[in-house]
Image 1 (cartoon, rainbow, N blue to C red):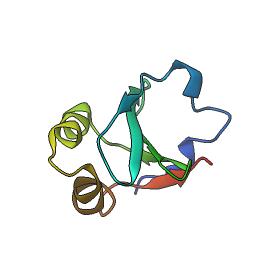
Image 2 (spheres, one colour):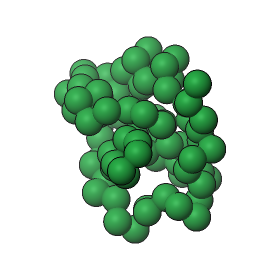
Image 3 (cartoon, one colour):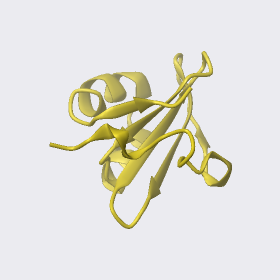
Image 4 (cartoon, rainbow, N blue to C red):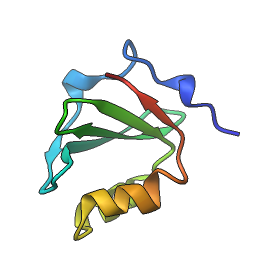
Length: 88
């Protein structure tokens, strides 16, 4: 079982993330980053909350970027599968 506690506001390199703005009614932007141990999808919503989804591989991130609806993809392909941590 994966533990979502591996990311915290102290360890998320928000200033170093390469944010991609997305055309969405709920999402402001997304970023992907990797450590030696894990892959992360970072999602910032229009209400200024930020969530980190743990274990999301880069190919899944690219599919999110290519999806016609980012919100539907997040709800159906990411949220049911990957552990999440709310950063702020």
